[in-house]
Length: 178
Image (cartoon, rainbow, N blue to C red; front, side, top):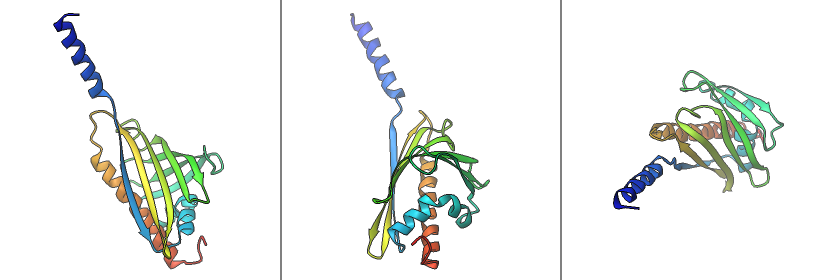
């Protein structure tokens, strides 16, 4: 191989590497005054009932598409016009009721296909004093050349606001989800 062929091969290799899509992530921790088990039940297990009641300006409905709430189940969350897309469908990949932990993947809707190739979330609720701390780690793969910084900021704010709405509901209704 001569120097010209070697340089051409190096350039092609670098171009391929530049086109590879890298995964990115964001995290958030939300401290609440509500017990961990109650937050987990309300915010994640019964969100299909509670979400549209607590934040109707954002969520218009949640429907179980398939399954029974165990891993593999898919639910659709429908959004109001305040959100730039009409719905997302997410699959429950893992749940541990004792450790108050779950993992989900977006399988349709949202920015899937237009801005991101994939998105997953790992959520864990831990006791902290008389309250709890809700931790989320979200991983996504953006489509090459698409800037999702503002979308990530909005997703993080939306998660925090949702947990805070549940906290407010549970503090006002201490027997709920006990």
